[in-house]
Image (cartoon, rainbow, N blue to C red; front, side):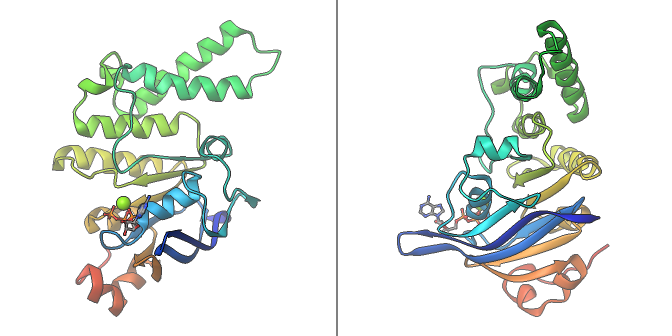
Length: 252
Ligand SMILES: Nc1ncnc2c1ncn2[C@@H]1O[C@H](COP(=O)(O)OP(=O)(O)OP(=O)(O)O)[C@@H](O)[C@H]1O
Ligand SMILES: [Mg+2]
């Protein structure tokens, strides 16, 4: 692991009188998988929103590959290499699996293409990449299903494929196994493990077994503040974390 990919410095998010995210600072290195953990309402999703442009931070800065992206639109931030999934799953229900993925692949190709690339070549390339992604996430057989007909677990997987369609350097996953049965959840974790070999990942997850399985480092939030930051081993030994949230954990 080398090189700082994402730097979050002193980010706060206020809603009226409520401070949902309070002066949060951390860094993600290239190749790192970092978990964001903390009790319900700790500010995890709000922190994601402030990083991805879905909310403009009240204060603080966000840098992606050294570039200040604070307050840019989600679309622009996505173009610069950061994609996300949502806690409440977001797919296009009236479109097929293939079409949902195709949209992102096409938009990326359209921006990247040059005059030397014919429309026919571009469409062939987009079709190939769309199929490759469907295959990667295990939805190849279901590519012609409407997204709304998929199981909830498969919709979560499709949302990950949609996030991958723009070829992000950093993938943000907000509770990707929430509400999913154990078998499907295990498939999602295997997919995250596979993706972690290709990109950096920021993962919000309540299940500590999953966190320990995939994350190198953890940031622990409580009432919007970072109360601990470090490797799984360090966090497991942290008495404040044990007291407020984790119980007793040990890393495998
Ligand atoms: N748009 C908003 N307007 C006002 N308050 C908000 C808004 N979004 C979040 N909050 C508040 O900010 C705090 C942090 O919420 P957030 O959803 O970030 O927590 P979380 O850590 O993701 O929780 P969970 O584990 O339940 O998903 C909560 O008190 C929540 O009610
Ligand atoms: Mg949340």
